[in-house]
Amino acid sequence: MDLRAYLSERAVLVDRRLDAEVPPADAEPAALHGAMRHLLFPGGKRVRPAFALAACEAVGSPPDRALPLAAALELVHTYSLVHDDLPCMDDDALRRGRPTVHVVYGEALAVLAGDALLALAFEVLAREGEPGSADARLAALAELAAAAGSLALVGGQAADLAFASSDPAAVERVHERKTAALFAAATAGGARLGGAPAALVLRLRRFGLGVGVAFQIADDLLDQGSDEGCSLVRVLGADRARLRAEQLLAGALAEIEDLGERAEPLRELARFAAARET
Ligand code: GRG
Image (cartoon, rainbow, N blue to C red; front, top):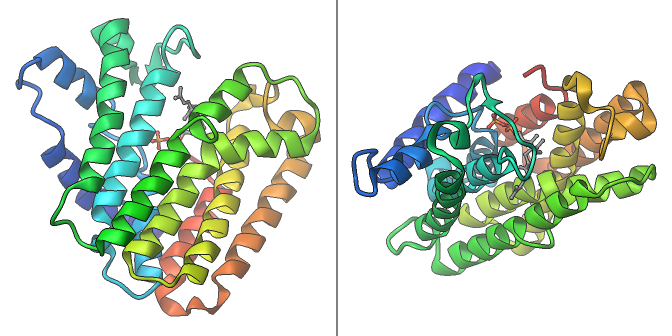
């Protein structure tokens, strides 16, 4: 299967939905809406949404049942990048080759744009009339909120700020929170919205967690400067870090081994995430 083509096909769906959800750049306050849109369009790989759609498909439902979750995941991811780039965090002037939101709109609007993207994520997922049972949507929403919170994304970022350990297990625990929790919310939520029973949702959750850690290891392997701070490349070296990513991928794939042909896009996405080149 051509994963690049698959990802861009799915990105069209997700982009259309995001464009409909975020107020236009000329809606007042125009600078705020411009700032919200700046990093959203053009977007990145839209990997987390693709995992949600593919998980929904893997459990036997049309992927677009997970479209509100897919959009919500990208909104949370984008908020986290906007805030991560701020001078008080990583202080980055460029992302995806373009000036970061605070460089273009100023720091105050970048903080506010991040806040508004996060709030919008939950609005999109909670809105009545979306596909999926109310119970499944509520559970997916709760899982996404937890994945964004102090025991996951934000907590992982806080732990990363002061990280000094050389224990590989401690590094992975930060990766689980900062990166993998959103992947787990994508795959478990996609399965829930696709009507999967609880035991299968749990397997998709473990799948997402393993793939998310492997994704972060691959990200650190790609980033030449990543052999410092909270990185398995620093504590294990590149070769052993790569082996660990392969091990995590194998464990994740074992969770969905019995799902047949309809889970093939999900498997391909996992292979891509664990051995990325971009
Ligand atoms: C500041 C609230 C807050 C959170 C920061 C997401 C995050 C936590 C930090 C961003 C920096 C980083 C290395 C995060 C780990 C996750 C990761 C590899 C992000 C990049 O994700 P991609 O490759 O990005 O999916 P694109 O550009 O494709 O959207």
